[in-house]
Length: 398
Image 1 (cartoon, rainbow, N blue to C red):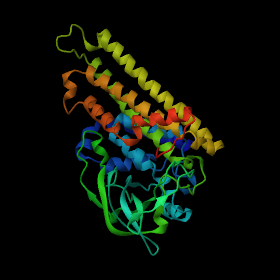
Image 2: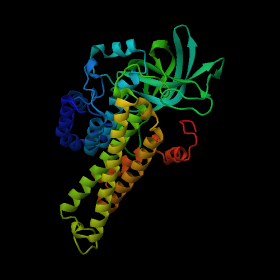
Image 3: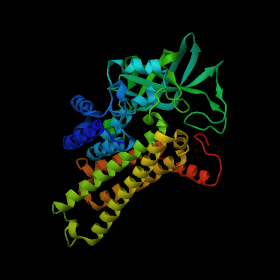
């Protein structure tokens, strides 16, 4: 059920969207969100939208969150992605002991975390915590985060400590894997390494972060994939599944933005070289545009239908929520394929002019193809759906 705060966040974001779109080139050149825009997004409630009301947040439902992220990505893909990552902060903090969660939000709800999910660090147990060394890639928003984390392999006697297979938390492991924990530390303790020179989503500032022998207290560690949230609210049930659907909303937003851009281009009187008719009057263009728009609507419909089912399970039957993992992972893989094809169609229809760096269609093209490289969007996740249908084991490590 949507609350009054949820509607306010969505309205505020839609009001901001034209200004965000007008600054896309600036955002891309800076490779991060400008400070004043970040402040506007905070004021709109974007970074507190999933924070519990008990801690000063809006605690919006899943559908509202997806609508907010789609609206932002429709204006600018990098902004949508950056807010998506930052707004997930409470779901990660909730994997800490409850007293740590409460302490982090004692100063206000707009707390942003960034970091690396890949276990690219090592943590060695010591009195009261761990000594951590590592370098983590793709730390979106690290330059404006107040906390950073790095997922680490727990080392024991110079070798990785192994976790047993079996059911636990959000992820089912079907074989023995190294034990991993996220290590949380103040952003000021990390070194940010300027590595984010990439094809698309340039404005996300997804640089590398590094630590060398830093101490992390035990209370600041958490299990990203198997941890049990310390906050008993629907939005904190199976948070990785929420994250996957939020990603899908960003993809739909990027694709919808490309449709908007190519419609604007065609409506301006654009005529392809050697063509007899204006682009807008071309039957082939109309067919391809209609196919792309229908595909984007289908992607949005799948996300909303799946999201509504997940939210109902989170409210009424948390066990059923966890069981949706294969279908949700497959949904993101499909949404990514469909939205990428839709953006490709917009790019191909736009002619030589959209190849210029100044073209918003070109930026959408680069953004969606950078998005599609994310591990969570890979086509291999369809295999989880197939395995579930066949009654075979499914799991993160299969």
